[in-house]
Every structure is written in C-alpha cells, then in structure tokens.
Amino acid sequence: MESRIKPSDKFISSSNEVLHELVHTTSGIDGVLLASTDGFEVNSIFQKTYDGGKLSAVGSSILALVQALTSEAQLTGCRSVILDAENGKIMISAVPNQHQPMIVIVVTKQQVLLGQIMHGMNKAIHSLMELDKELH
Image (cartoon, rainbow, N blue to C red; front, side, top):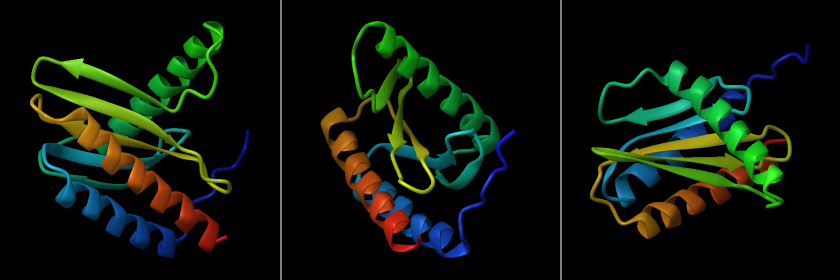
C-alpha cells in the first residue's frame, strides 16, 4: 500500500487563494473542493453545507470510473465529467500535477453558463499545476 503524501502547508494556503478566486470570479458556484486522487479533501470553499470528505471520496471514484469507461470506448485523456441534476450541476476534473495529482469538484446552481464555469475551472487547474511545479 502506497503511503499518502500530505500536500505542504504552502501548497494548501496557496491553493485556497486559487479556489477563492474561482468562486468569486465565476457566478453560480455553490462550492469548490480540491482533493487528492485517492479521495482525501485538501481544501474547499462551500457556500452551502456539504460533507467534503464524502464528496472527495465519491468524486475521485467517479472520475476513475469515467476514465475507465472512456478508455474502454477508445477515447484518450479523459480530463473531466459533468453531472447534470434537477437543481444543479457537478463538474469533476483531473488536476494533472506532476508531483501530487489531484481532482477539483465544482458544485453549481442549475442555471449556469457551462462555458464560463469550465473556463474558470481550467484557469484554476492551470494555477494549481503551476503551484505544484513551484513548490516541489
């Protein structure tokens, strides 16, 4: 069993700024969570009450399943999945950090511009990847 490496305090505090910017520059986001690929919460900002531990665990499992499914369908490089519910959407995306790969989960209201959410999320992912490079 591989031992879990905890992100540095500097990465955690800097990632908090990245998540804060995403939430406050993109309308319609109810919550954003950064988790390790093995399903542990690293950081989160929620406008509603969510269980970050459960979201992290289930979100990482869903992304892994979707990546397996796309692979079976001979699609390559699955980066994200969008779930559409009656009262909102969830976007789960890989953060392909070289040293500590992670996932981002964004929970939104139903009436959102997906392009705007994806743009904000991609910007955040890019910032998180830069942080990973800087701090390792």
